[in-house]
Image 1 (tube, rainbow, N blue to C red):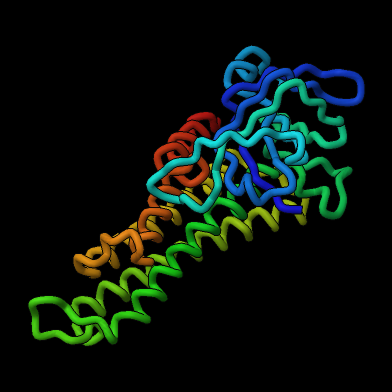
Image 2 (image 1 turned 45 degrees about the vertical axis):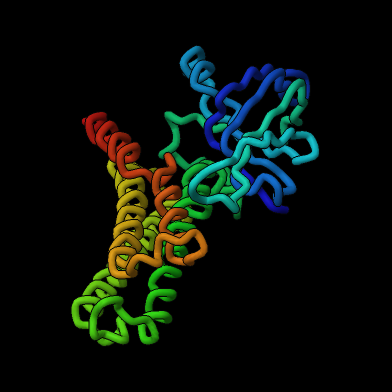
Length: 280
């Protein structure tokens, strides 16, 4: 199966019925990979429903794409190939066993009765952030460094005596700094995965401070990756503004990806501060 996912509904009018849930009206944006997916992972809560029922928690539903309408509205400056179209469901029924309900107040606890892979179920949103969010940004940053290093030996600097970027000292320094930013981002992401694995395997509860650390690690990693690509762009000359330039494509994509709610420094820094303020 191939999934696209949206973890925040713009509108979700959902009623519980015998054996499942009736989605009277649902609208989600943006469903990355929508045109290539076999199933959608959709949050059945919108902001209004969460405010009206604080005990509702988070509901994530697996829905075959055959039951979802793809809205043709993805026209952007970056991530053009992600097919992140909006998704719509009208009067659709989702069986109960295709819905995961998570009480957000208990996000730090791991039910002891869960075994095997089921022990990861309480952390669906965190796992999604790692697999479809920050991992893609890290891959883009690595690709930017590899592309620049591949082209530098044969690329001169216009209106100078330099016939190879690779032979210029300050460019070597910038590439080294960009590389270390990407490697540092990798370390932060590895720590996030390690912390998740340790808590799941030992059935340990996450503290609010630890949750804030996970969020901060991922968003800081995204910032490092974006900064690394920005350094390389500054040394790439005027030709880098062409739409066909691969580094230009990566630059636009990583900027768009870094603005996502799962990896945006501003949104997760705010969440981390709230977590710390809630600690006794």
